[in-house]
Image (tube, rainbow, N blue to C red; front, side):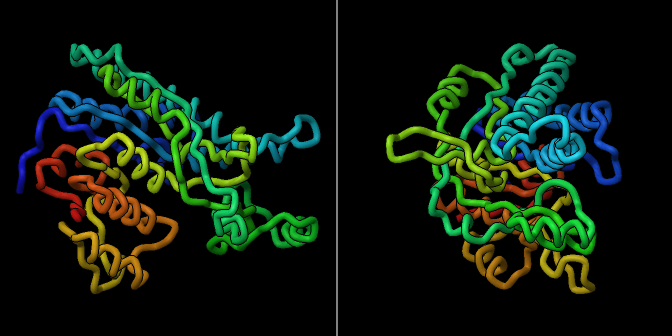
Length: 319
């Protein structure tokens, strides 16, 4: 297996488990503790000489905001999805920037003062087919009677895994990162950048060329692949809660995969081997990155990032 190459530009996509663990209440203290552990893993990559750009999910945090808004709807006007996305980008970016800066400072690394978070908008197509078929569950769960009432008002809701009814919003494909010039400038200046969180703030451009937010959620992994392509990153590192991608997941015939070609990955996607709400978008993002010229995409567990770069674990996807 190849050794990691110092000086590579890595786009590191942090899964939701890096910020909020299953079973937790999602308190600020819990999230800071989780982010602190993730920061230690990323600091180890920096120590190896890699240049790092970080992106992350924001699903639980947006869900918390929507719950708070639902509870206070009679007192405070609710905010649209694009504003919630912007708020959570800033919130999580702050946590990661502080935790990573502290982790590097403890190591005496000079990059400790070069960690910065940047909120980004991501342009989508206003006629993307996803707008006709909302599929992404967001926000609080509703009991059946309240869901029926809301559906009558025109709000799209679906049954979510037997846990109740939830609002669904479109999940369009990302087309362009509006602030990409600033992102490139900061990377070229040697900054460790946290950006494009939660897939970026979804925006569309009108006939006059003006941008405005739209009610949607962009998949964080697919947007992470776009970020990696735009930066001509060497590798895309997707960090999640499993060490390797598997087929026949949780079946007696489960088989973990250490290496895949893009064609093999596409075949498994077409066969429904990877769930739409979990591993599917990660594999799709990896395929998009390597097919557009990226050297490798690696999917692995958060705390196994360095061994995965050395070829010791994880699932490597190559063109």
